[in-house]
Length: 124
Image (cartoon, rainbow, N blue to C red; front, top):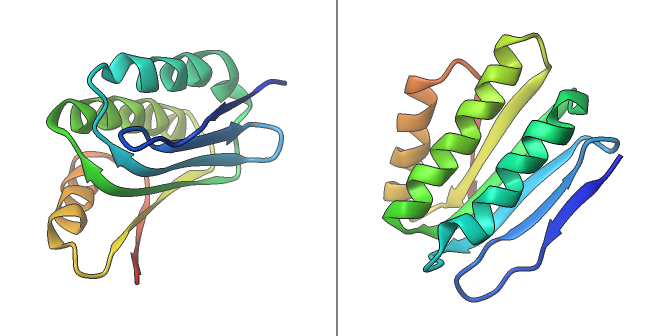
């Protein structure tokens, strides 16, 4: 089973995914000029390895999301939601800086649209 690792940069989040270890984490700023450079590998990983992902809390912690990244994150969440609806035990931990009401609101908006369970975790 393969894993996916993308190192964080100033405009790209840190990404770590491993179906064998039930790890799915994206954290940091997401403002790349080319969102496909970051999110296409994630979507391809979900298409190829996601069927093995189970009993996993998908951890997302964005400090900032550009508009185009916002759209791609929703696409990733829709794929996870589809897996959840097919019987996978998957949930989302949406972490946010405790003073960032906009990021909390975005997570709440996603949660209101999708069926996958969300947990909200403020961070200092």
